[in-house]
Image (cartoon, rainbow, N blue to C red):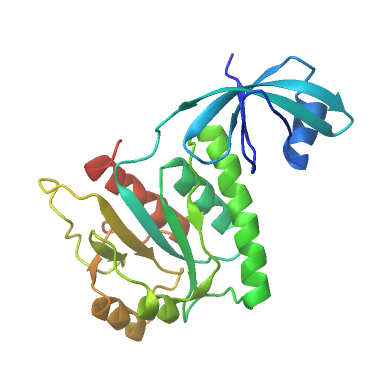
Length: 244
């Protein structure tokens, strides 16, 4: 039986006892009916997994003992940065979850001219905390031992004006662009991709992408929803240059 993986935002020292996060503890106690002695896998994002076992269950409070740790590398060899326009509703949760499962290294939420969502600074920070929790849950499920970096949402033009380019290609996906892509014959270690809102990027935004060194490419003849485009682009990159 597959052991439950639990993220703990604290140092994990063999021989110590840690309190599990409240939401996780409640799920273990009330849904999984966990009992003392049940085995777990613990991780804290440093690239290791630790053997663990439940020590006590008191209501919704659960403690676990920490056993030996071992390095586990399930990170993609391709460092993908996803610049994602924030869609309305809970679709950003879906994008964060699936991008995490697919090995994305960094997620940069942005707000463009045609974005329906508008966030002030406090709301952006609150959303970032929520999306980080979504990423933690996805890491627990998919086996990653390092968490992706998720930034607070910011205006797209601010990001393009301030962000330093990475070491790989910068690609902005646009429905009407030709499907010209980097050759699979060349090896790349990193890539930055940008996905627009449902209405696409505005003309001056596309010009800002060009100035920032992004190339415009397409994902085929059909117009994809923003969440579909994000996942399709990541899968394509991982299949051609990553570990899929």
